[in-house]
Length: 136
Image (cartoon, one colour):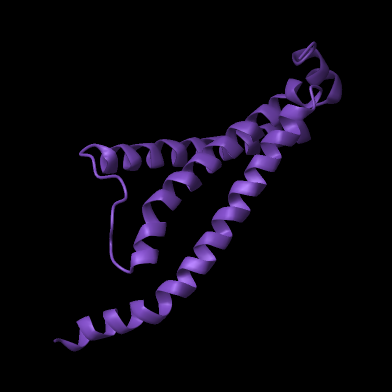
């Protein structure tokens, strides 16, 4: 047995439970936080009329789905201690990878759009904004 392989085995035996704990903790915090944001914005009809809040829902949904797919991929690996794919059908891995990329890019683009909206609202005059977004 080579020393590098021994180090990886030794490293994974004591680090896997710690990583699994933090991974599960962060996953639950992320799922709860994003669900809370979505529920707060959708629960208030007045908040659903704002373009910025709709972008915030888009960001929360993209993060929520990305977190769910990432958890599906990494939690079994940390639990078992070796790479393991929980979905045993042929297109599972490529589909999960594809949707991870889609939701990650949606999250990044939502953040960029939110940043542009914030800059617009900071720089634009209130009367100009009122004329542009009347009856939203």
